[in-house]
Structure formats: C-alpha cells, structure tokens
Image (cartoon, rainbow, N blue to C red; front, side):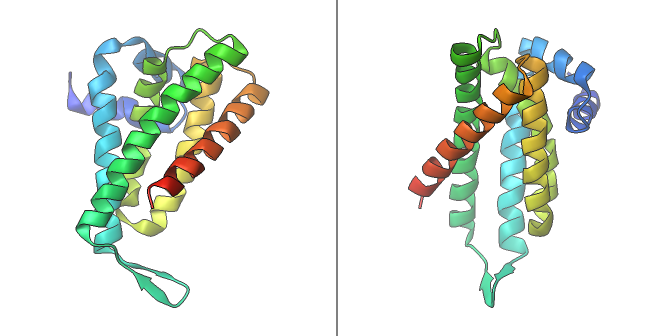
Length: 168
C-alpha cells in the first residue's frame, strides 16, 4: 500500500468522487488504513483544541491534554459505532446490501478532512463536511434514496447526541 496513493484516494473521497468511494468500499485490505485516518484526524483535533484555545462567549476554553485525548478517543469510538449502526439501519429498514465495514472504509477515508481540525475554527467546518461526505457515502455505497439517507442521518445524529452526552 502506497501512502501517497491512499491519501489521494482519501482526498478524492472528500471531494465526493464516486469511483474512489466504490474502490475503497470494495477493498477489504484498506480497513486498517481507514481506521488509522479516523484516529489521526481525531488526535489532530484534540491537539488543535489544546494548542489553540478558543473563546466561548467571554470564557477562554483550553482543555488539558488528558481531557482532549479522552474526548477524541471517545468520539473516535462513537463514530465507528455509528457507522456500523447506519449500516444496520440501511439493511434492516431499507433493504440495503451494504456491510458496515464497507461504510467504515469509505467514511474513514473521507474523515481525512478532520485534519483541518488542527485549527478549531476549521474543525466545525470539517465536521459539517464529514456529514456531507457520510450522506453521499450512504447514498452511493448503500444505494439508498435521499429520504432514507435523511432518516438514517437524523436517527444516528440523535443517538450520537445521546451517547456524547453520556461522556460528560
């Protein structure tokens, strides 16, 4: 596996290239690399939160390294769980043939946009683009209609909101 070509695939997926999505979804050997991209993106976001504090109103927010890492790892685990849950919903409620690992590979590669989160101001933008990428992944890889994608995204968002709240 060539790092440069894999990162190029990741960027193509971030740019919503269907051919790159299909290629990554089909290659079972790319699962570890996809999870690695997700983990590095989460850790980069944690570093950004510590290195570049942000203001919330008039309050300066700067987490310590332990808090930032725990949050990043928690988000990483929840993201993986929600990808598999999305595949479950697609299979059970919308008769999709997609497997969780296929979605995980493509979503993992697409999470390369999370590298922008080194700057917390770009972190929100990268999170929003990740949602767009995942919606397109559900549409193209799970072969769902947009209505089904919206239902799954809302359901997964509500579950993520609940799980994230349990972390604090």
